[in-house]
Length: 517
Image 1: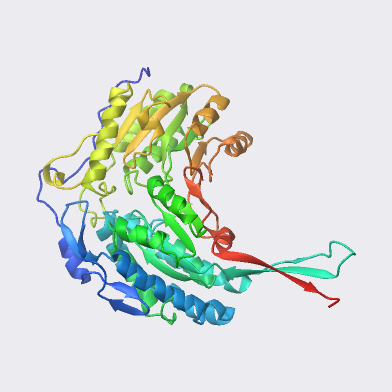
Image 2: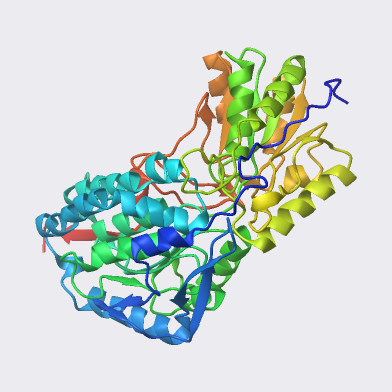
């Protein structure tokens, strides 16, 4: 057991006992209308009924969207299929395709403030992060810009003559994979829209996109920007809906590739059915990432506050790459716990459109209950709860708020250390030796990301290579449009970012020429 004294640290909220807030005035100021589907160049009323989108900060119904269902998906996939099989987009010159995509970049830049507000209206992300964070409209524009720049650089190879017995010469081409089903999550809808749609279009594919049923506003705005562009009809299509629509899209025989970001359970279902017609897949799934804090880290306080902050602010730990396991050397364990608990004092809950708010609510009541059940499980298994893990009251009681939880004396065999909680819970696990830390980090069915805090670059690189994960941050972590990210093991298949995404949205064709014929 750690000898550190218990620290009382509860997120502060000026709204405790104050007047309740509502997100509906922002909805009205933005002129949000009930959602439609965008199919074959037209906004249409189709599908199989409507559903409500509820805001997690207040549980107010904000608006409704169409459940596309099988019938709506069929229309969208047929439109995308026609646009790919007989339309101009796949065969368009690189110059012309760039000419069409480049104005989209400026249109997203011009609308970035509205996009930020709509994203916060979607999922309760604090407006400061929605405007200026790594999931903002500006980042989405950067991604479209990055992939528009790739269009005239998607090349194949030529190969040297291998034998004297034949005069065959070999070359390769990269061709678009076909109709892409892009399925995005609720937690970063703006960034993941761009991460999937921009490279798919740049490579000459056609797209049917389905956003999470929990977050449709910002993506509808982005879809409207594409609707007003010079993209030919059917090249981009938008369908909305829940699991029924998602399954209809991911299993549709007219789809050639599925690019999905979401839960491992859904990812496994997509993978199991993709073999029926050999769909290509990119799956970015869950994580239980570990951050290793060594005694030679430059500043224990900064490391502790960074790791606790990733769980307690922004989306409150609802990001698959969040390092929710802090592996801390015993010599600095007490100091780390003290600073991590102190960080929670800076958390501010409340109106997500208030710049003072630091943290998002849990996306749904169901997920909130799931997070609280994990907290209870951690206590029952013997971990010590230093702070948090309960719900605030007062004016916040109607929303899905959970006070950030800090667990210490955690063993890696506990459920809270092994299963993805997707909430504001940090588990602190002590270690003695570097090899032990690496073994604990790798003892997971996930492998999406990881972190290392150390001033010894030799050690940091050695440990980074030893960690079985798709990406590792040394003294910092972020995702950029030009660098690949993705997971191993249960965290997914494939990579998104840079040239790796171009490879994922193209098929490689080999052409042989007999020069003696």
